[in-house]
Image (cartoon, rainbow, N blue to C red):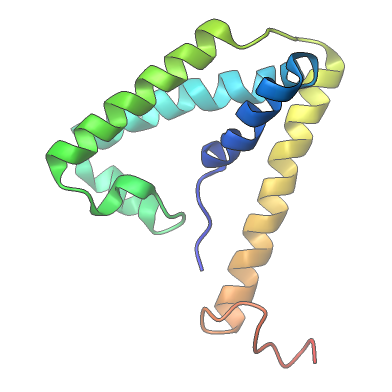
Length: 134
């Protein structure tokens, strides 16, 4: 099982923004960074289709199996959303905000590595048939 890219999990932080703007502001460094890197990644993916294939080896992206026209439309919408995030997300550059954002990334990396480890040693079946855990 492949995970989605870390930026896909920003949906949970957007929901947090709707609930509590102050708490969501602590994710400003994460949201700003993933928005900028996401825009760059989308543009590179549109210009060089090999980028999407290489990315798909590690994570599962939603528009990978779309037609080229649909992928362009989807990615233009993603760029628009990322620009909105950059323009309207509540800015918080405190040490606490950087710590929380970094913790979010470290948590994702741990889950990503654990997922890859389990898939490597269990033929993609994850934790279900792991004889080492039984």
